[in-house]
Image 1 (cartoon, one colour):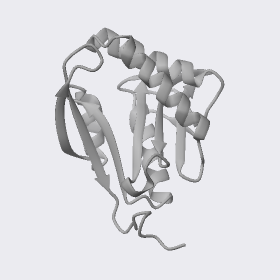
Image 2 (cartoon, helix red, strand yellow; image 1 turned 180 degrees about the vertical axis):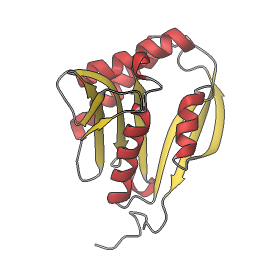
Image 3 (cartoon, helix red, strand yellow; image 1 turned 30 degrees about the vertical axis):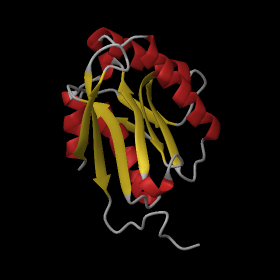
Image 4 (cartoon, one colour; image 1 turned 90 degrees about the vertical axis):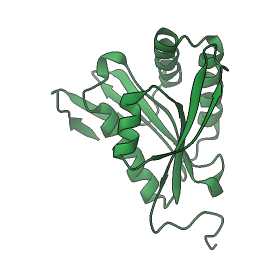
Length: 180
């Protein structure tokens, strides 16, 4: 899928490409170290968890999208529907390169991920983030997500307020209630 953005330019959404694991990990590690003081524990956790996800990836319930332009990865988003199907799908590893922020790419990625969740009949989509990421929070709320929980910790080298957001999708039957 290719799309023209509000700021001009053409962006393509696609699935996994060689090097994506490293690039998405790099985007997370670089941004959160620079802006939030996160240390190597955060970047290592992103790499470890994303690698495990990609090794068990099943297109029946998982989605992985890259936003690309001119052969460069500008951002990504993931839907993990296999981790705990009864809980719904988990939105993960949503990140944009700094030079790509504010161009409509995040909205494009979120739209694709939410369409996937509706198409797969997930009853709920949830995500874990932390307080202070206002542009991301605005986008989550624009797509209908609501904040449902908060807690404090310093797992990644800086004190943060973890947040959980959820989106309940109407007319969807939870996986544990669905028939054969």
